[in-house]
Length: 276
View 1 (spheres, rainbow, N blue to C red):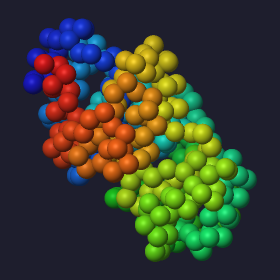
View 2 (view 1 turned 90 degrees about the vertical axis):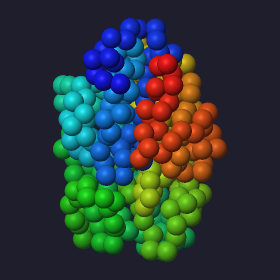
View 3 (view 1 turned 135 degrees about the vertical axis):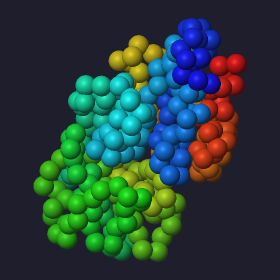
View 4 (view 1 turned 90 degrees about the horizontal axis):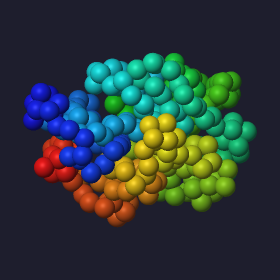
């Protein structure tokens, strides 16, 4: 569907008022691009009266360039729900930080069972850098600032800590972290090699609900798309949850439907069907 055709649609043609999409493995293809077909489908849903909101585990500094490429001017939920960002105004509306004392206790409890972890941490703010410790492997080509002294982690407010282990799988590491430290921090898996420690109780649903209230939209009017276990709370909040074909088994188990993969325009497949 062309942009012109999308703009001819009127409100009432689409059954939802909010379309919430994860980024990696969902809206973004494997090459980090958004297909023309998916852009057109989102434009058509918007022209039909729905708002589109990005809901990502990435903090604002790792998200902003994608939003600019999409000419995205609305609200975005970043940092696993920690940040609500107004892309058009380029400012943070809300930001939640991790209690660094509790995070230190949590890391100690996890390492008491697993041995030393590889660490990275996302600093708060519009320009908050990601500190990357020895052995930690950043996924893709996202920028990071190396550190060697673990005390550097605690010198400024953080949104989250990333953990990796030399031998445990992501699922195994997340299970150990939740079992040993789940009373101190939130634990989620956001992608391959991405196990995160978050402020306790924080999820994508937290940030999405805040953003939705600002837009005057209810959970019952929301359709959400995702691919990883960190999207489970968002699916629980939204009226309809759609997992990509490439999604983690835990998310597929709670999804209302499974669409095509992120490389096969899975979001567009569903939106086009709903738009008729």
